[in-house]
Length: 200
Image (cartoon, rainbow, N blue to C red; front, side, top):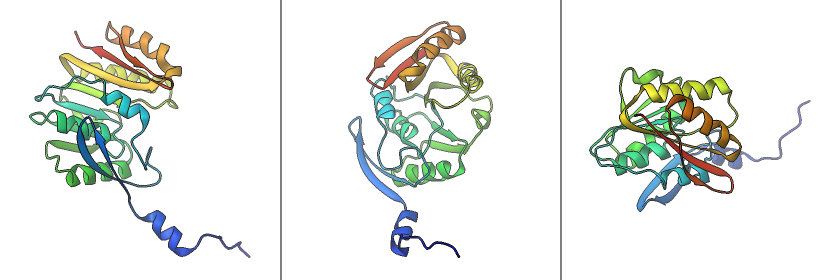
């Protein structure tokens, strides 16, 4: 005999509905839909917000958000660079579905969203800005692939921005210098560090 759950049907049904919240990022209002199982489903995470506060956008920038989740970074890129195209990538099909939904809800028509293993879906396209909220719990090999692929997909003068937990700060400093030949620490908070490298 199986044990009956103490959760009622109404609670379970509510949990299956979209999580919806509004927020203001860099002076613009957004509506976000998300779901359980996607990173930070109920609010914009502190690392992503910190990263966005330290990016220097131009209206014509073509941007790439790698590991987009439900779309926060790429959506802000699309808003701040309206004359460019912002591409959002994620390996999770649920995240991609929600990123598409959120770009539509917020009328961000200069976006393209793809299911992608790393950079695989962008072919030979190059970008002015690539950004990522790098996950902490992946292998060293995965981080190296991200850095080398970012270098290959940047225009000369393009910039790669990342936010990481502080425990990865030294690794990022070392590998940025190895791959790009330069490293800039833009902000170090209590938990997260924002860094940037430029393709010379």
